[in-house]
Image 1 (cartoon, rainbow, N blue to C red):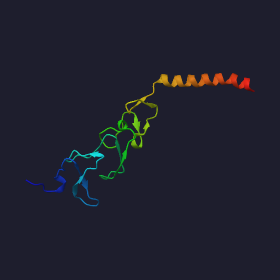
Image 2: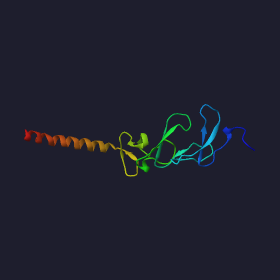
Image 3: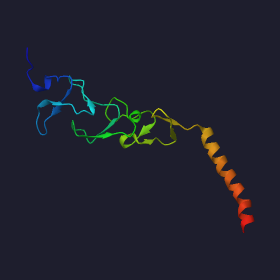
Image 4: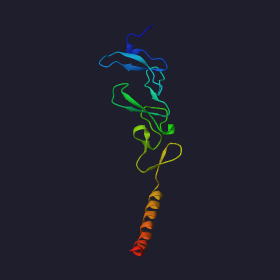
Length: 135
């Protein structure tokens, strides 16, 4: 038997449910190439190498960006970034994280901070005699 309402209809694979602005009805819209549309009543997923900025809570009101590195923007839920990444197109590592080769960012260990402070202090101490000698 058929559905009694368009809200009960499912979309085919390669399309997604799009609610008409100001209306209670929905239709199936073609899937942009930067998204993956599993069909049914499921929302689109971002394809690997793309990041989706969800503008607001209205369906299909989003911007799609190509990421500089496909590993930084994995396939999956819209707005998802690789582990330890954030920001538009997943361009930055989260605070106290550093970039590793697989597109992810990993947390800094306490030893990393100690090493940087030690190097900074060492350079400062070495610059004092140089300053005195060059005066």
